[in-house]
Amino acid sequence: MADNNFNPNDYKWLLNYEETYNQYEDIPEGWREAFGEMLIKDIDEVVKRDNIEVGGDFGFRVMEIKEKWGELRMYFFNSTDEIERIVTNYSMLSKNICIGCGKPDVPWTTGYIIPVCEKCFRKWWNSDYRKAIADQGSYMMPDTYVTRRTNKDGIKETIHDVSDLTKKIRARWKTRKEEIE
Image (cartoon, rainbow, N blue to C red; front, side, top):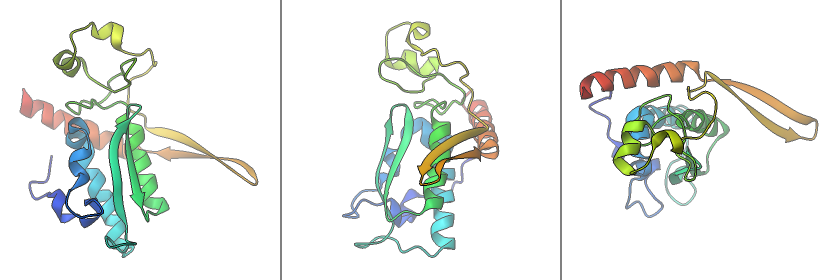
């Protein structure tokens, strides 16, 4: 359930460099509905806990938010490893959340790669949904994912557990779906 008191304008680090535009609206609508508020609050918790300087010429801020290759991308100025990890978690899950309505566990389209449910696909395009989706095996949001980084000692593999986040997003969709129907 969304927090009725959530206001993206309360998060100064979401403002562009000139502080004239809040970039929260750059998150595609379905992703805002599915996890936008949770993402912003998770990042802000780190900002406040670690007393990270925000704004100004050298403070932490979002530089850009967008969809690219079917997943959420956020670029920052003066970020931290923990904030980057939070965003990566949401980015990995965004690959299987409808960009239009926020429905979880949906496939990607071919061509222009985006995760989209059949209902939103039919709203936007006049073509066969089954022919447009990519054969990607499972469409389910993952409970874990693996990252690999190369360093002087070789390749470091890290397994990230996002099962709690996956459960929250599915529960949020279930509540929203009941409200919509």
